[in-house]
Amino acid sequence: MFGKLKLGLLACAAGLLTAVGTTNAATEIQGAGSTFVAPIMAKWIQVYNAEHPNEKIDYQAIGSGGGIQGITDRTIQFAGSDAPMTNAQMTGAPAKVLHFPELAGPVTMIYNVPGVPSNEHIVMDGRVIADIYLGRIRHWDNAEIKALNPSLSLPHLRVLVAHRSEGSGTTYIFTGYLCAVSHAWKSHVGQSTSVRWPTGRGGKGSDGVAAIVKNTKGGFGYDEYAYALTNHLTYALLKNRSGHIVKPSIGGVVVAQAAIVKHLPADFRLPIINPPSKKAYPIGGFTYLIIYQDLSYMKSRTEALDTVKFLHWVLTKGQRYAKGLEYARLPSNMQKKLLAQLDTVTYNGSPLLK
Image (cartoon, rainbow, N blue to C red):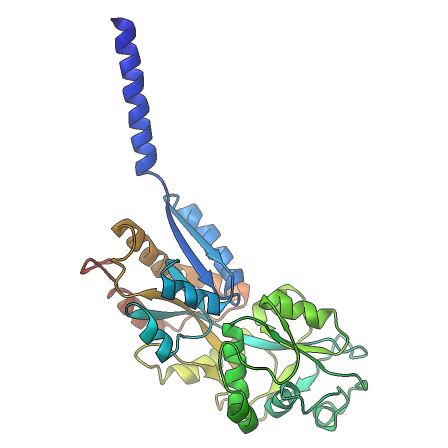
């Protein structure tokens, strides 16, 4: 009798442990998309998962195009994208999507030109960059490049252009800049996450573009500033819209951001391109987190709530990590508006954060 009772108690205890284990199992939240945000996303997830052991956030840096496709198909809980969804993409989504700019940062022009001293930087302007990508400027000692760099001895070396091969938010930001500085680019190529490039070789992801440039004498491409710094890539200085020569920097994007945010649209989709400010860096953009306003399609209210809680953390406490990883944090007035938008996210008709 005692043996049977003991076995019964053990079975009961095992059942309770199973129930507790099930109850305490971490909710898994999957994000995917932008490579631009990958360095800080890794930091955010490390800190957030440690602070919230019952929630497991994961992020796959597959490119902004992949992130937009994933959120459209609802195979992920949130998308990361440096390009806001287009009107057509938003219309094609199964429900209303919301954009949350989380950070901003510059896009740098990187190069591999032998003979240029390591303590100096080649200077570029918008017209020269556009003409290189249009295939009109083909050598580093071209007269237009030399005019911007009179003190440098530039070689008669072919400019070998690198660009992203997949849908990319960085490409969206970069081609937006080319449209702003070149009528020929705007009319013949345009702005998109993926365009028909007039010249050059494609590389997958930030590392793919960087590899082409680093391994090719005469290589020239574009990459995220945080990625360029982390990987010790050589970058160009740019002449901005006001005619001042500026280096890629968080300060330069903050100045540009301040000029742009004055005209903040209700849906928060806006570029940070070529503002008329002396200290502004001309090629920059927000990187976005994208979710649906109604999360009733998710498996449970807990999953929906944990998704929203992570976004709230990113927009508040997560901002403290921006500067250390070479991103520009959100302006406080913009942050308040984004948190108000987050309060509108619902599950079965009820706001998740109220």
